[in-house]
Structures are given as C-alpha cells and as structure tokens.
Figure 1 (cartoon, protein in one colour):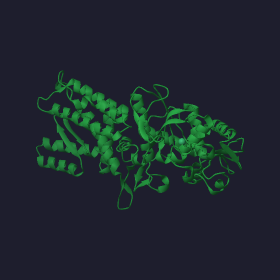
Figure 2: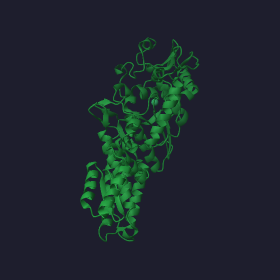
Figure 3: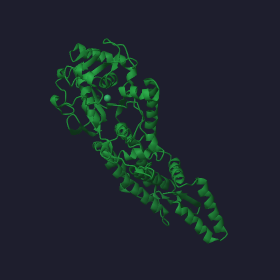
Figure 4: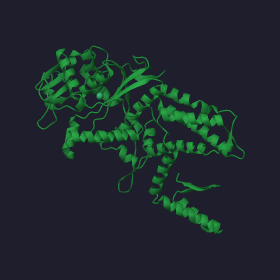
Length: 497
Ligand SMILES: [Zn+2]
C-alpha cells in the first residue's frame, strides 16, 4: 500500500502507515440522528467509504467504526416537536440513515456504536479524568479542565486565548458560569426534569457531546489508533476536545492521522438544516439515481467545498438539481458503455489483437489517483479516458467487418470491476439502472412507457402499409417529446437522452 493523505494535525500530506501492519483502524464521527441525511452528509460518508474501499482494494484489513449520536439536545428538541420520545425519534432516524447510506452504496461500518449503549464506558472515562485532575464536577455537571492539557489547540492550530466561547453552538449561558475557564467544556450535563438521564457519580444526567467519541473509539480501536475523520467543522471544538479527553486519560497519542472533508455549499454557505438550504438524500432520489449523488460527491477534491444548486419553477418549487443531473449523465455513460460492449456479437470478437493502452492502464491509474490523497477528480478523469477507449472498441465492432480483440474486452471488464470496487460506481445491473432512468424521464415528459410502445407499433404498422408520411409523423411526435428511436435489424428500441 502506498496511500498518502493530508493530515490536519501536521498540516501536510504524509504516508498513511497503520501501527499494526496490514490493519487500518479508522473512526469517523457519525450522524446526530435528529433528521434524515442530506446531500452534504452523502458526500462526507461517501468520501470515507471510498477511503475504506481503497484500503481494502490495497489488501489492507480495515476496522471502520462510525458512531451514532442518539443522545443530544437537538434530538430532545426535535422529539418535542414530533411528539415522539427522544429514543423513538433517534431509532427511527438512525434506521432511515442506514437505508440512505445503503442506497448511496456506502458499506456499513464494521462497528456502529450508539451513545445510549455506552454510558458505562463514558462514565468510566470521565471518572478517570476527574481522578487525574483533568476534569472537575460543578453543580451536577462535569467539565474538562483545558488548562490541565498542554496540547490543547494542536489540531486546530489555535492558541488557548483565541478559542471562541461555546464554539460548538451546544452551550448556554448558565453553563458558562459553572466553568473555571471559558474554554472548558462539558463531559457530563445535569438533566432537566423530563429529559433523558442516566445515574452517575455526579447525579442524574447525560454525557456531553465530545466524550462519546473518545470513549467509543478507545473501546473499539484502542487508546491509540490510525485515522480519525469527519467534516472540517469538527476540527474545533469537537476533535480538539476528543484529543484532550483521550490523551489526558490515557497518556498516549490518540490518533496518528486526522482527515477532514470540505462542505457541500450553496450560495457560499455550508449546507445544514438551520440554514434552510436542506435537501435530503431521499428528496433528491425522487428525481435522480442515488449513484448520481455518489458521483457528484467525487467531482471535486474531498478537502474542497462542493457547490450545490437547484432550479425553481414559476411557483418557486424546486424542479431540478443541475450538478446532480450532470453527474447522472456521467453515471449513465458508464452503464451505456457496459451495455454497448455486452452487445458485441460473438462473430465480431477476434482471438488476437492488442489491448488499447488506455484500457489496460486504467485500473492502475484509478488506484494511483486514490493513493495520492484520495484524489477522486483525477480518478474520474482516468475513468473518462477509459470509457472513451471502451466506446471506441464498441465503435470498431460496429464497423463493416470490424472486429475487436477478446483480450481488450476482458481488460474492459477488469476496468469496470475496478471502478465498482474502488469508487462504488457502475456496478449495478445495467438493464435495471437504464430502465429506472428511462422510466423517470418518460414520466417527466408526461408519457408512459406503454404510450411510447404503442406509438412505435403504430409506426411499424404504417411502414408495413407503406404509409411513410404517417410513419414519419409518429417519429416526429415522439421526437418532440424527446424520445429517440433506434432502428436495427432486430427491431426498434428507444431512449430519452
Ligand atoms: Zn465525534
């Protein structure tokens, strides 16, 4: 394996070397399950999915842990709106998340721990920090004493004096008064009446947000592990606080490599529910293939922001997502190419002949692009070169007396397998994928597939009766609706490009 990744801690790209040879231990901060996944989440977790796929394709065993935050103020607030208990709400939303991730082709993590199942570990870690003088109880809460940890600020490269108060947006004024220092943060919070709570040595309460990741990561990956990932917004305070808690408790370095991804942005704002530019994976999937969202997430480098736009109809209702539409066309091209080479008849396949270098070189080009800080745009560019060469092959087979080498077709299949394995693209059933796209586009034009088939039959009948004017008018009527007919010796097929 020769993967290099940008490390937020050292601020440079460096080789990723797991402490245990051949085994990468990875933790990624998971969702707070108050609402379903949006396009920004889709991009984030697709990035880490590609990381895990790439490591596995490199022969590395991966233990991938991603938590579920099911105890949080936002969940409590949201549950009071929906009329569910916080536990019912978080269980329902967590299940919806799993479905959305599966739809996007993101493999489930090896371990998916929930906060509500790990109160024992969390309380034990807080007790350890209190015993070491790195934390202090205060009026039923427990706070981390930032001044007791010399390395505070090393991930976000900030000095203690510059730290913003309540940077997580998860604190309030009364809480500030209970702290020794404004940068101290809650490990345990006393619960208000009616809120979910658990017994603890400091009274009934619930964990602060940051401690769960420290406690669960060390349980499943050890006190020191290889890679921790999450969105750029988590660098400070969440990940900075994770380092402080974990290293103060264990006395060992917490994580070797910190990986952070950029946001999906619209009008230069990070996409989040609170900003009102919220587009759920489910909502976008009503118009597009989930694989299009997946492809879209790879179109810029994972550390860069990714633009997301939509168009509105006259009534200001969303009627399109330009970037996702473009991504869907790209994904469709993968399937069309697979369809084309699968349709090459046996008599057009020759036993000899060279494999075009763009085809034979593709799996390595793809792998090399990902080795270089998971450069997905370069991987997609390599994919375009590959697809172009495979289409040239299909073109060659369709020419008069044209033949293609059997070895070239086998190499093309290897390329498609690499694409599906490394990026999770183009691996679905060709007929099913293209069928779904056609059905959706047909409906968008106010047609049914039965309408189109009926008109094609009318045209066939008109031609048989030598009524060519009528046959042409039927073709034109379909063309006006965007339906393209393809006549071949085996019959007429159609598509909506
Ligand atoms: Zn976390």
